[in-house]
Length: 427
View 1: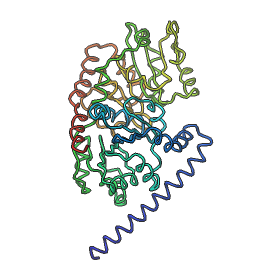
View 2: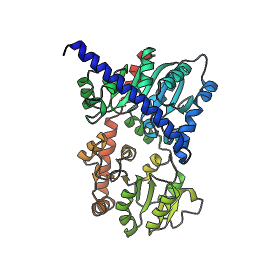
View 3: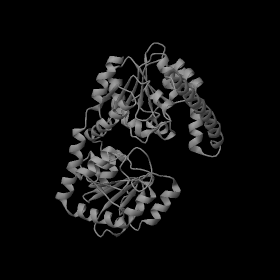
View 4: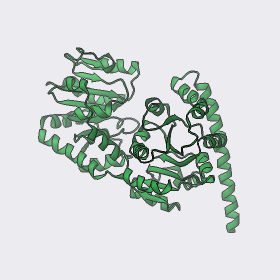
């Protein structure tokens, strides 16, 4: 087959995939509008997008250039925050617009002072992309980690707007590296610069012909280091912990709780435990409290005298966990027995040992720290109990294990500074 025929066939396949992508988007939006009638979270997802145009018409400035930053959810926002804050400080004449895809990100950070305006990103249709960009007119667009939206990227590229992807990480499992991934590879190729977390990601980009990459590392290290340096105290935690050893279990799923509760219930000495479940719905919180034999209290029920005699504090709000970890002597990070591990850097930065479940291999920092023995992997309750006895009982072992974690994070700082240095050349 002649090369021109191959190119024609390839273009035809990409056109078919593009058509299917559009059909899928419109069908998804129609389905979401139906589901929104029955699901509060989906209702926020749909309703929030319908008000974007009115919101932007009121807030967008007439005489300030706009930097647009997009995050999928809360985790990506936290990852990008060091860059956002540096942009806001250095380019004060620019207007910072932050968009979210997920309600779990938008609802928590819709009032953040890191941006001048915060809203949902309309669905990635051709019409939405054109209308959104006609209004915003960004001079720079920044996407965080995984966010690849073909129509927004295509429209930005056609308007010669610099587009940057930060803290990106890639693996062979992703669609870009499959035989059928040409459509998404083309979208990825529209970025002006891609800042990757590791050398493996940079090599994968080269294998698909994308050369505009920079090995900068992960901005989350800068973020957690900043939180550590702030050391914002929590009076309720100081009153709860007193001088007792403190164990904090963050972002736990039911599968994690099944592993840790036996130790909590049967510990013979004085131990203060904080559990911050991933699911803070009332039904799950009731089930969790029913499984505890030690006196427990929900954070929402806290008052001046309510901590007397309490040994387990359950955090049923969002936004406190990163600061609670500073009071821990040992931490457990959830998800390793369920859908996937949550953020281990948040406790590790405070120089404490971290325990996790066995599903951690998609997370580079967890693999690094498991190898260094700052993070300890448990495969069940018996192993968890054994490690906890050792960590609580042996102060030197606990201190040395935690030091591995804080030293590792300190050595990985600097990604946001490197990214800002390059962004200056685009603005």
